[in-house]
Image 1: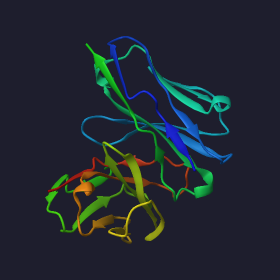
Image 2: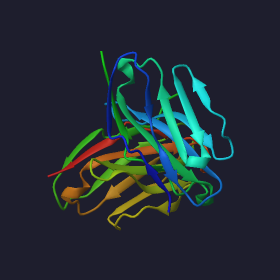
Image 3: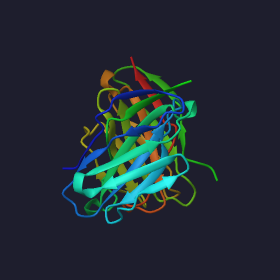
Length: 117
Length: 114
């Protein structure tokens, strides 16, 4: 069965520091999809990125970057020059291709990121 | 374009009652999934609907059920409520039913069972 582990329960940094959120996954599928979501206090999960298992290119979007390494089954998320508005709970999630999309997302427990001014 | 809309936002129910939650997906999206979020268990998959058919269900008792209508709107029902059902229930919609399609979530319904 698939599993997503986010070992960091809570991270607190001062504004403008860089911070990396770790995500390690387990799956038996050779084709799978990884996601990151942000959950602000309002509750909804905001989609940040999707990465396919066959695409190991890292991605950068503004202050956000993602490092996908199949060799270590990791999909880490880095925020550069953090801002107070980045404070939220961040979830890493996995979807296996064998489920055909019907199995839903398997989420990690989330990392609560606190950016102090 | 309107996002995923969930109603009501907050509910307080008594043990033993039943409750129905509603979800309106993004226009054009045919897949709707439901998740339960609790501090202890985190985010857990409840079920997924595509074109009015339930394709899969997570590890939840039969008290949890749902349906999807022809306009893709979905409802989930919980009967004989227990204290442990208190949670944030999130609905997500996807344009396609495939695993590589990103899901967009509503703000959730916070259910409190007393």
